[in-house]
Image 1 (spheres, helix red, strand yellow):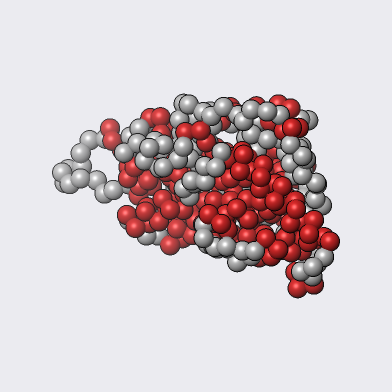
Image 2: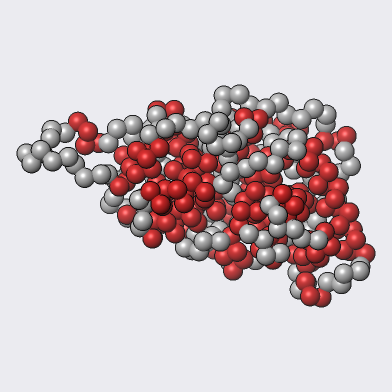
Length: 363
């Protein structure tokens, strides 16, 4: 079973090659380095998760909003539209499409609370600040709808992970790791580079490697086209070898060579992201950051050390299964299926739209 845009319900216009990250509007038209943009995307998604969590939204709505956030910044520059405004607009739009409606005023009050550090209970319904936030969210939503071309369809890798769990991956530790890594995948641009099956496979393979320990098979062995033992002679018992659990996802989906290249790239990006974290403030991801990336794929290096781009980005790698867990860490503050055809960027320059006012950099 190979991955395609057809079997995931994802439009091909939202699939970008990894190289597209070097030509985003932020990089091409603004004074942005790739590492800085990816860092600000991670901060924006973290803010989005916090906003959604405080509003009591289901995880599915936050994952949808995070996907839209990444799609938006493939068409508009982060210099022209502040990540917090777009994050708030994505959350507000997701409350409509995911049938978990919230009033605009409530979203604006929580937004105001997040950027000022004032408890939402002390943010009055009727205030100039809340009115301004409502206007900013509506303005950002208008540009967001244009960027998305009113295409709201997304598919979460978590949906595929549930399929894998039900199919036989019953190790609870692996499940917890994979679930949390899938959360963290939204802090990277994976959701606009690969289909949900590829991302889910990368998450569970990385989770198995982390759970099995440093002396277990390498990532290269886990994602090879054929198991390392395939060329060995049949044991004297003539009994078939036991299923290789470390290759469960690869064999379950029947990935071909192209799919495995995409899994390799997804793993490399995830590990690059973890290695960029400021480990003294995120010690719980040291295990993942220490795992060697695959050696047979492209040697991607997209991230700069986050310690040089403070404030650090909190993560959810603490075995929790909801984005809300990231709210208990440091208070500070790049998925669709692969396709060779990518969408043209929206015509017209970002400058042709009113610029959304900037916000305090608290995420």
